[in-house]
Image (tube, rainbow, N blue to C red; front, side, top):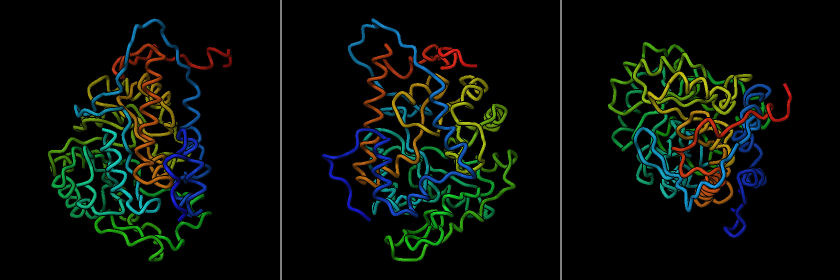
Length: 369
């Protein structure tokens, strides 16, 4: 793999990080990182949804400084941007998830460890600050129970249950990029053991995908909650009725997400689904947004539409590819700095002061239908 870019030449924004990572990563790895399902309609929609809103700032607020600090599940963080769960970080950096965890800790935010991590839970946790564990529910319920126990024992502060992958979707760009047969790195079974170094073994097509339990339902949430005292968030909620059901079954939060466009192609953009979900939750639990965030203004728009915070996924891989731990930390710092500037320019002292009044639909300004 090409050597990381020197720190003096780090990109200026997340879009530049994306371009730099594409130039550095082997084509099969790039295909894995950016892949969406089907025609990738939802991948594009996650980004274009932000363009349908404009900011309406207030002037002369008399602010000398602003704060980006907030809380999620009552847990204090320095900025309302979390690391979303994503797997196989060692494809982009030898330190993989350990580097990501350290970067999140340094930035004062939450790292969400993926079930498909390339190190064991117990190897990543010592490098993390505040962290959550992302869980798929498997047909082997004993193994699911074991994962939850290990995460709790290692210090996880919450359990993020991904609910939008009863089966793995078809991702043509992965297949086109021949990621499944690329001789790079095998996928560990849910971070149970460390992966071998890059290029040491033939790649596997992700065998754990066949272990997902498609029959997992609302009736099973009580069983899941009984396994640990950790608060549960459901990730992959798009319909407001599902948000209501999540709360009725004890979830402490929901993450509005379409899996970054990697599951059901043609699904509604995460930002478009957010207002209805936030209205259904009505302040009874935290609502987070995952999908398409690339700028501080994107964070502002998500907060205005009802999110407590946002998560970033693909940008984590870009940061790792460009500069390892320093790259991920820099990406988080870029978003924090942009958000701080944007809050000041909007006359808002903190994320808690962001409201729906900040936004105007773009089509009302242009006169388009």
